[in-house]
Image (cartoon, chains in turn cyan, purple):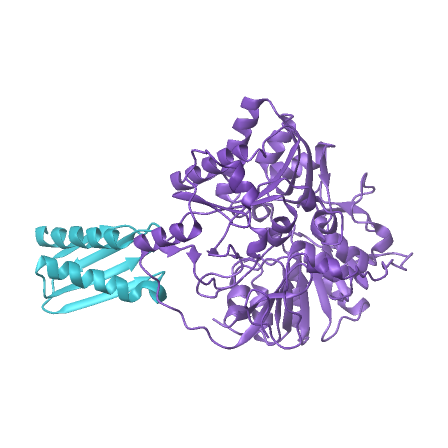
Length: 84
Length: 502
């Protein structure tokens, strides 16, 4: 099973887990979900599109990370998954 | 009805009109109540107190919070309420903390249906936020609470006074014993005006040198195993922050205070116990040493850092309404210049109070709006997690009120077009210091003039607001339930805001 993990559960960071899958699945847990849930999903989708990934399982545990943090954690997790 | 800040006021309550409005109304005080009990006051259990004082449904019981998150007295009393199945009780506490979990049960079962507090955090606060309290939550300020008690607005049937060292007659103070907590300032109004007063102690002594709690007011003395956990007394954010953002804010704040001419020989200050405000204290100390000046006094909640400056001769006097750590407890028990004051002497709007003599106060914020109104009562979700404490009192009294906060906390921007709850009115808030710049309330033309030519980055609050949103994005609007669960009362009992179910 190909898995990549990046990030942390520190405040203002997020922990992203990427797992190879034959369909697109995105799970988001966030301390600020009711204020930024849609925005977090948007960042994940646009980052995956940039990478040309159409099928993957992503789990994000967010502790109030800014968009660029989410994006870089996701990029790292996806690359680690590929390398695993 | 709406108040002067445009916030909804439920029917039957007086709207907030301005922070000086109370001056139009005279002070009213009830009679001080003395104990008639000249006999043996010692009782063996809380249960015996309930029998002796015939504590029944719908009574109001009061508590002070000097044992903070280590308090066991409210728990003992609430367990007794639950065991007896009493209904519709009112808890009038100076503050409520997370360790008081038995209160959650009492709320859910309708044993407790109304609560007064000046600060409220933990599981019971969550239960109330979720709408489980059948009556109302009244959030007061520290000064407002003492005013409410002396005026008879809060009528206390029985005050339970946790007392770390007590004689058999109920003379005592907070300086000694296994649960020593220092100042007992918030218990004084309860001791004077509650119909019946019960001391709860775990340390009986033969005599007390300087009793703060006085036997003439005390009806009974109960000895229990333990009134507090000293580890919990020293709880919360009473250490200097190591966060570089917090340190930068603190350093800029100290420089700002100096440029405003507030750090001159004989100044007075209150800097609280938050990680960042404590760092401000440290930076102020450095400037004081460099300029070779002394402070006339520091007030409020007191920490080891204030006690240290007193011992070093940098502060002449400390006026202490609450000790935040055990070093402060030790200081108040040993140093004659570390002076205990009551909540009324500290912040009662009708007293010649200490807060009115402050040159400046440094405070925190959970949210602040573009008119400088501040929320420290609820999280942005509506969860009750704090309260004014002395926030509104010191803001009203001090010549300059400074709010220190990062632009965002875990992505949530702190500056908002509309804040979830108003705790302190913007008319009393003068400066906002963030890591990206300092905003001066445009009402304070005098401060802006003093800062002409300053190298500090002074910007309009609107600019800081836009800057924060450029990082965080715009938070989605949260729909607010229409159900009222409580009110936030300003110092004078008018309603500054309404609390809604989450």
